Length: 129
Image (cartoon, rainbow, N blue to C red; front, side, top):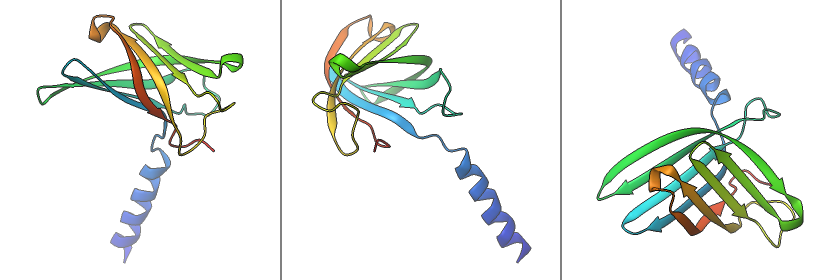
């Protein structure tokens, strides 16, 4: 009984530290599949966020991690995530704020992709209201 209780407490503790993605974007360029995920900050008011860029080419997957800051441009209904070597912009027009269940268009420029500008990423905010 103690073992079962210990295992339950252990799993509930780990889930408390689970990270939730604020935004997830995916697209293709040439023969590469590009996926970007930006985690919600912890604590919630934190200025910096973690982002990961995953590039899949010929079945090989390369991942890169960044610390990003975000800036929302309300008049244009956009949010921009920037870091050294990464620039992700998501346009959530016609909504005033990102909505759950909707997909939006994004664009990405990354030093890992030779600073190519990728347009037409499909982005979603999985934990938006």
